[in-house]
Structure formats: C-alpha cells, structure tokens
Picture 1 (cartoon, each protein chain N blue to C red):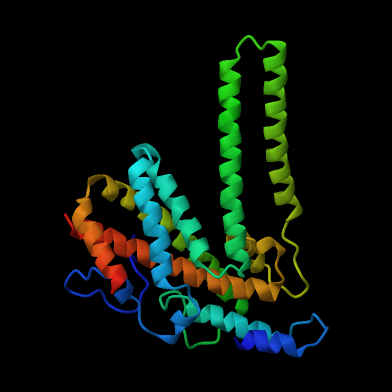
Picture 2: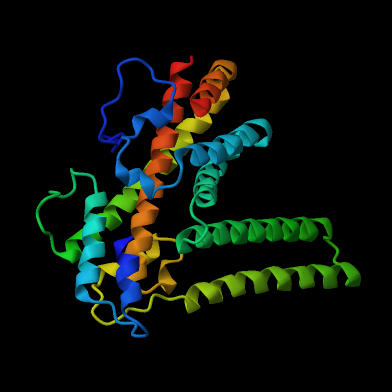
Length: 199
Length: 92
C-alpha cells in the first residue's frame, strides 16, 4: 500500500513508543474519541485474543475487535456506534446458533423423533433468526430523500446504521465515523510499529 | 457544534436548509486527506461524497491489512518489551 498513514505530522526519526504522540494536537481532536480510550479497548481485546484465540482465526477476530472497540470508545449517542455494536452482536449470535445447529445435526444422524424434533426446531430457530436479520436488512433499505445526491446511497451502505438516517444526520455521522476510523487506523499502525521495533 | 445550533433554530419544521447541508459537506471535505481533494477549492458535493466513500473504503482496507499484520506480529514478537512500551505510552 503506497500511503501508510494520513496523519499530517511526519514520523519521528527515533522509534517513538507513544502512538498518541503521532497525532497533531489540533482542535480537530476535540470531536474524535479519546485516543487513550481507543487504545485501552483495543489493546485489552488484543491481549485476550493473544491468550485464547487459535492462530488461524486471529486476523478475523482482530478485525472484529478493531470495529467493536472503536464503537465502544465512541460517543454512545452516535447512531453509527450503536449500529456497529448491534451488528457485531447479531453476527456473534448467528454464528453461535449456526455452530449449535451444526453440532446437533452431526450428533443425531439417525434422527430419533425427539432428536429430530429438536434439530428441526433448532433449524427453524436459526432460519428464523437469519430470516429476521434478512428482513431487517431489507426493511432498512436506503430511502432516498428529495434533493439528496445519488452518491448518498453508497455512503449509507458504508456507514453503519446509515440506511435509517436523514441526509443531514448522515453527513454528521459520516464525519464522526471517518474521524474514528482514522484514529483506529493510526492506533493499529502505531501498534504494528511498536511490535516490529521490539524485535 | 454549529450544525446542531442551526438545527434547533428551525422550530418544528424538519426542513434543513441548503446552507446547512453545504456546511456539513464542507466539513466532510476538510476531513479528506489532501491527496484526494484540493482542500481550498470549493468542490461539488457529489464529488465530496464520492471521495468520502472512496476514503472510507480505503480505511476499511487498511483495517483489514493492519489486522493481518497484527495477527502475524502477535504470534512472533517479543511480548514483554512490547507490553512495557505500550504501558509506558498509555501512562504518559
């Protein structure tokens, strides 16, 4: 990737262990989440992943941890942060149900009546959950307002919870989302530098 | 935030003025990195939205990329010195 960082301040010559120092102390930081809170949530998640997640699944888990810690550190009044946390929880619930379903199906090959009923009920449950999720996703189809440019549709899809917002809200939420995303990327980049330099 | 103040000024009516919209759009434009848009020129809002979408997508890609690098580094790096550096940086 050609562009590593979008922070205006140049990287310091000596390995600066403090990722917070990279960000300029400008007024723009007033609206973005506290970098310390961002670091706290994410690093705590990283430590947990390091302890307990098997290596093949780590990239995905770290990516999810990045988004959920970003959402947790953000202002809870923000629509995007609440929507992001909801998405994370829903995804965890479906994968858990799918895993339970797989286990129950594989454990009952002969399908006795009781087990058959249970697995069917389990299937119905998981199908209903998936169907419910699909329904909410379809019901939350982007509704374009009068005078809203066509590009806003793409933006609604990119920003969590963007489908339900008014156009002016969408613009505000997008600005906040971009600021937080950028801070998260800077944090992760700082951590990568830290871990690379420590070798 | 100025946009919140101006929203409260329109009592009851839900119509947002063009000026407020363009104000929000210009705030978005300021957020974009300079490589994507000349920050001083007034740019049509469609362009700003387009560039913002591209920017968000590239940030998502960076998160994916950095997640992968972090997962590799977690497995192989020397945790104790990194932990020490992290704790020091968080406390400062």
